[in-house]
Amino acid sequence: MTSTTCVECGSELAISDDVESGEILDCDTCGTELEVIGVDPVELSKAPELEEDWGE
Image (tube, rainbow, N blue to C red; front, side, top):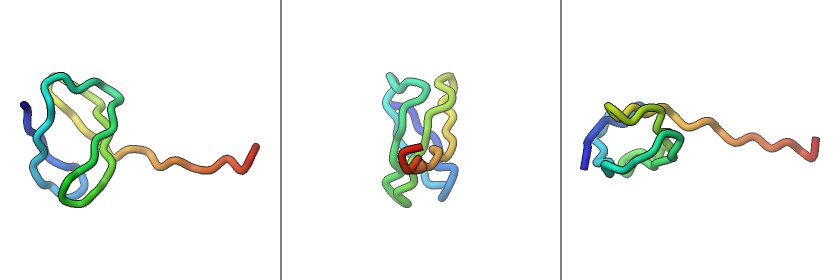
């Protein structure tokens, strides 16, 4: 297990060693969806919001 911090609330997150870039994780403290953008070391960013396309 690896640990890193939530980019939204700053709480510490335990992350599996086999995490992959692009994976989406949830912060247990604030509930923010986080995207893994780097794996060595683990880097997180706030996951992009999904927008509706309204059939366009």
